[in-house]
Length: 415
Image 1 (tube, one colour):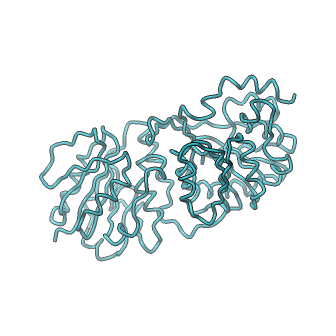
Image 2 (tube, helix red, strand yellow):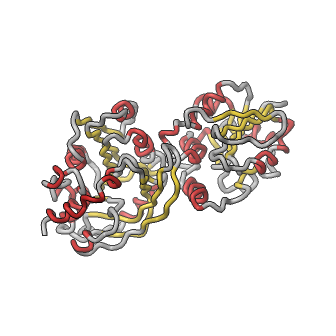
């Protein structure tokens, strides 16, 4: 009985689907058709007659998939990312008989109709890049609605590993999703997000805090008088852990973050820029890193993973920016990039009065350096070699716009 529709998701115009199509031949007697979801500029190769083309709508693969799935009458859908190859030992009849939920890994998912109807795919705004779609969705399914075959070589794998560094790094990054996640545990940490006109990235920043097996105690967001669609986006977040403040006028990041401090109940605070995002296992890693943090240290920091925004949804991997140990104020002022990610001991941050409001540029710039300068007087800053924080470099970021003002800030900083 032909009761399965296979959907191949093509992410980039240069992706190949030949290995994926070849691996589906073993399922021919079960397949109603093969749909290829692809960028509008993608040129489909010549293939057999039961393939259909389905261009991505609105540059959003999740929305496109949901639209396509609404028009299908198949009992099951097999989703594969381009380049994935099903194992020749896959027994699809056995898979159907053994589970009532989704089955698979980050490369291929076998999904009953009841599951994809009840759990639609996320909008692109929630994802760091489109290639994260399948593992992001699969990681959020309830445990009783999925069977993870992540380590099972008898299911699906990438046929060929790309020679392009950025493509490989995205593939490796998606492995951080906890596809077999247990019930989430909390870390006594609060995420602080100050947003000003970063609505294209805001959902991704918030979602990245809620996706892993360990999640923060609180997520506090302040919108600092945005004039874009940020307020609309924030009003859609109806989650108990999230507390949102709205400033009627733009006050600058330091003042905005200080408005959140009275609401912090946790032992630690991590600062997240509204255009950046955290790894899916960020809080699990932090739980281990904070265990032996000396009581005299007011702050823990590590490394940055950097990505260059090529357009609204696509990023290109740039590399890991490794931190180094800061001992003195001179070390801090000579640091070659923003120090972070910054995990503050809450008591220490409140002891120094929160984020300083300097006279320079009305306190709107370099609040991170100013507060670190004060924290050095409390105790030594602690560097550890870990990477959980992803920086999105784009031309509209505050850092990119204000490189030239650094020297003026140094001149007014207390000696």
